[in-house]
Image (cartoon, rainbow, N blue to C red; front, top):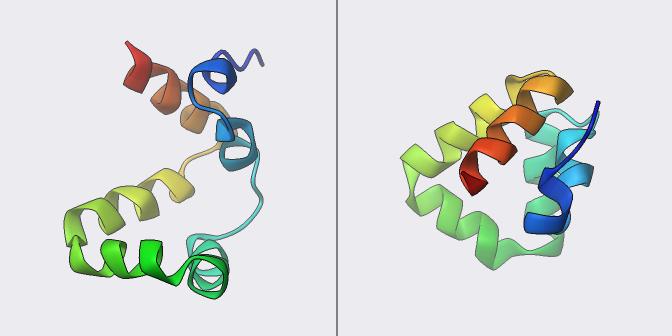
Length: 70
């Protein structure tokens, strides 16, 4: 799979290829960047979108990230 998202969105490859569940990611986010986690708590739509992103396969995640740059 070609990951064209990485240059446009630095760090995207780690999200695309992550084996973490959304819950594991969110727990790490709270531990390492609580202010960012709080903003997701305040924006339910954004949190739902992130949950849906983590439910995708790596291939679907790469397509989603590539579409953001379009």
